[in-house]
Length: 270
Image 1 (cartoon, helix red, strand yellow):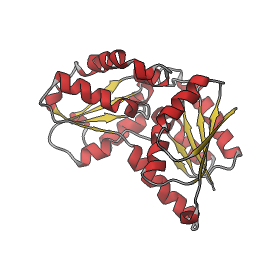
Image 2 (cartoon, rainbow, N blue to C red):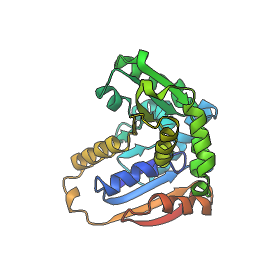
Image 3 (cartoon, rainbow, N blue to C red):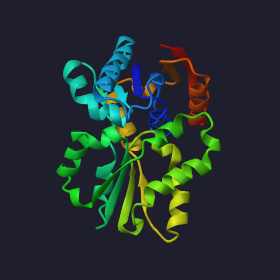
């Protein structure tokens, strides 16, 4: 069984890591990171839709089904059309974990951090309307975190990352919020940075920082077991990572992110 993951770059590896380590994902896994065109968040929407479909076609041609679109921006722009065009493929999208925050509603506000494209898309706005929480949700673009995540020196950029997060969060009184939703798969890489900055700004603030990786992983495993009744008999986890541009930086960062996952990893250039 071949399972596909797609992201604009490295961010989707946070979802893949969750799936392998906590949901025991097994089998042949093909991860395509479009490092040639990352980040998507500030690019022209029609251009992004075009390259998303081109990259998804690569995974389909390798026989992947299901395919996780482990990118909030790509999901917002393309998943509806992809599902309509490729009716035999199961696409599992990624969206900010607003429902998780809404279900735990504590009569406070919810801060959603995402890319500029995701924030503008109807998919996110419709979800907020459907949950009837428009009055308590604040949306904040945090595109620069994607660039930090893709940087080979990311682990040495603690001050720069913290300063940027501080700049973002200083616009709000966090005592008024119950949750911060990390609405891009790149953002969970900075979970500890968020905790550190919040503690510095608001030492007594009790706020939940959440992302959607766990929910996506659970959904993926459910679909896999529906497709393959013998799935539990799988023993090995093999990950092939496709790059759209040769990059030792990408390889190093991906190994850092997947550090503790028990998977054989190989790299190919598309």
